[in-house]
Length: 321
Ligand SMILES: Cc1cc2nc3c(=O)[nH]c(=O)nc-3n(C[C@H](O)[C@H](O)[C@H](O)COP(=O)(O)OP(=O)(O)OC[C@H]3O[C@@H](n4cnc5c(N)ncnc54)[C@H](O)[C@@H]3O)c2cc1C
Ligand SMILES: *[C@@H]1O[C@H](CO)[C@@H](O)[C@H](O)[C@H]1NC(C)=O
Ligand SMILES: *[C@@H]1O[C@H](CO)[C@@H](O)[C@H](O)[C@H]1NC(C)=O
Ligand SMILES: *[C@@H]1O[C@H](CO)[C@@H](O)[C@H](O)[C@H]1NC(C)=O
Ligand SMILES: *[C@@H]1O[C@H](CO)[C@@H](O)[C@H](O)[C@H]1NC(C)=O
Ligand SMILES: CC(=O)N[C@H]1CO[C@H](CO)[C@@H](O)[C@@H]1O
Image (cartoon, helix red, strand yellow):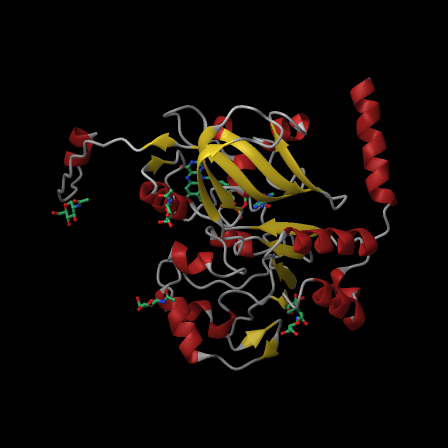
């Protein structure tokens, strides 16, 4: 009974907030937001737009050079990582309920049938986003959202299997360029006493980047397999990584996060402990925007590797497994 009551109250609180559609925000409001983030407010068009001759049903010029680069690298995770408008699973760039989107043929990105006579539409891509470089940029985004009611979405690598790094007509927060990495032979979480061998990563750092950095420091970072997945924000909130040396979420020592009220908080075992607990598995973006996280690392150990190469057939794969 208590739970039901709380749920209703929170539902009412949410619907009571008046909100302006992102499409109704004035030029002056965008300029003010842009000034508060040092000119890093950007407009976003769909990833494959350069290949189309219509955008939102209006004729536009095809950009041949940009289009062939997109076609050549359409399925490359590293290429997609560099674009706010690209997801790792292309369907999340589209609005599936209206079929609005802008996709090439993933099997053959040069297939002209995907673009000829077809309009490239905005789909789930936020029309505006902030290229985040510091916590103050995130604070400005939250302030804008509080003042206007425009919803926010947080995108890092765009790996999310549920498409949660997208929301149509939201202001996008793009964390990809939070690119710091620090190795600590002795890291003491703020207000704690014990210290650990650790690496701090900005929310835009990928697994591949931190694996290489850890290796350079004779250390081993425990993470997942896809190199372009974010090692910090989205993963700490939503995923679990590997079982060797325990779960990835249990190896997090400290998280710096901006909460929706605009505070930059440090969460660890000694302060903001409830937030620290919730952040390790509570779902991407549920509690705020992670700026950086610090992870326990291990002394690097030599691995025994067998390199086998064979041509797969219908039967030998089964034998191999
Ligand atoms: C090919 C592939 C392989 C994978 N392999 C593994 C694996 O081996 N092990 C494993 O554990 N998982 C794996 N995953 C799952 C992956 O870890 C999750 O999808 C993870 O949430 C991706 O995080 P991201 O930040 O890279 O992606 P995004 O899609 O950018 O973000 C994921 C979610 O986190 C939110 N978010 C992003 N940044 C922040 C931030 N700074 N603060 C708050 N919220 C944020 C987003 O809004 C979104 O809800 C795999 C996924 C794919 C597609
Ligand atoms: C924000 O300001 C920068 C620098 O003046 C400018 O290049 C950019 O186009 C502006 N963004 C928007 C969405 O107006
Ligand atoms: C484009 O045209 C289609 C079909 O006529 C229509 O459903 C859609 O709303 C239009 N989209 C835009 C952005 O005007
Ligand atoms: C795109 O693909 C081409 C051909 O494979 C390659 O030469 C080029 O470096 C790629 N561009 C980027 C930005 O990855
Ligand atoms: C594994 O073997 C293949 C085929 O000989 C070779 O191309 C590849 O570089 C090897 N990989 C490693 C990690 O040694
Ligand atoms: C202490 C130490 O060796 N730090 C190194 C960790 O790796 C980076 C990246 O290669 C080096 O710049 C540091 O010197």
